[in-house]
Length: 88
Image (cartoon, rainbow, N blue to C red; front, side, top):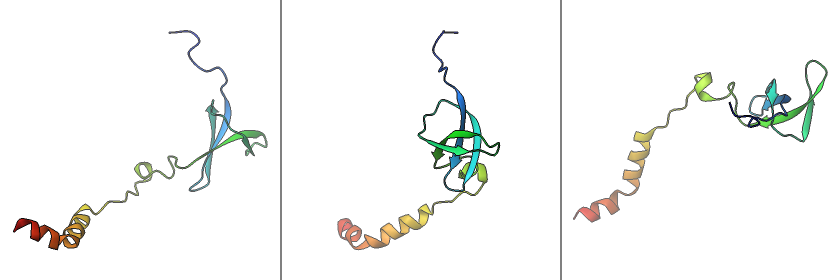
């Protein structure tokens, strides 16, 4: 292995999912100006994230399907006159 390629400033950091207020503590090198008091009473750096495994559709199983057929039909009905005039 190559020497001195990995960061040496690992520390405990709290990551908080802003969509559902889920937070977890793990080791990271992520920089943060905010802090939070964790369940153990100690203060840790806080990194806010938009999505985590508790809110991502892949992990929750709550996928939203896009109605592509409906979109195509809506497009065709909107531009039907233009489309018909081009075919003549």
